[in-house]
Length: 339
Image (cartoon, rainbow, N blue to C red; front, top):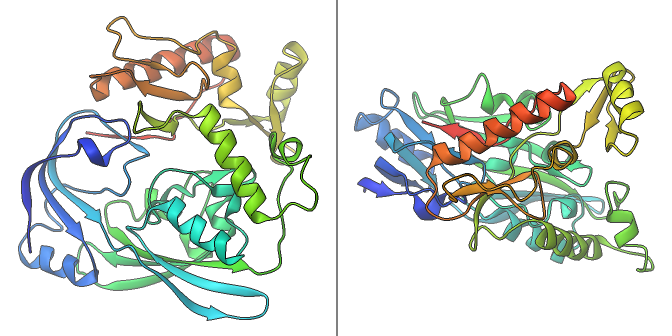
């Protein structure tokens, strides 16, 4: 067992916040958790599971134990003429996994291409893009208790998936670590191309396949979203708000070009990026010049250089207040604040 003290998390969070972890440990298998429990690091000590760090914002140094999964394998556990069940370790880079599957011709996650982060975060956040969410392809999730080291498997239904939400952000928060995820992917292409500009981008391609979708999405995301290796950011900072349809109808009557998506008979989803952009905030930079909003995508908050977590948080709060003042819509962060 090797635990490092005062470990810099600069390279383990895409906002590039130079926070320190009091204790740092790399997770490889369920036995590691039992060892941490035996040594007294769990469950009593403050702890954090840190994957790719793409959905976290450190507001200060972390005065506890950071557990970083590094188990990065891919294994086929069942297969038929129609589908494949493939298990991936929590520490595997998400887009590495997507590329592996699309190269094999396994469909279902191509719309989730180029999303930063790790496999282990996919069920926690229920990541989503272009009309597809992780819940649509997750078969089961293998987890380990941080209280007693026991191993447990949850079905898709037991994960209680919601919009950017799951049981791991609620009842199971800080109680379990995701060890691996099993995905059910199809061998017969069932393309989802109706969301956003995807259909128009594919228009010039005859009989597009999953690799065409992947290439278009990578190109589109690369053009709109800044590379975290170049400028620190956490991707989409806010969730797209879901509001009452009556309120949405009132807003669209006033703002005829407002971007909306029907959710149900009584609810409508709004595009958070559109709301922020129409408050004139795209390209905003704080007075210190350390944090702001990306010039090409209003939904992305950025570290302009040397920002502390609280600098990003202050920009986020300014955005929330400005959007609420104009539209009476409350934006909720998709990024998780860590203190």
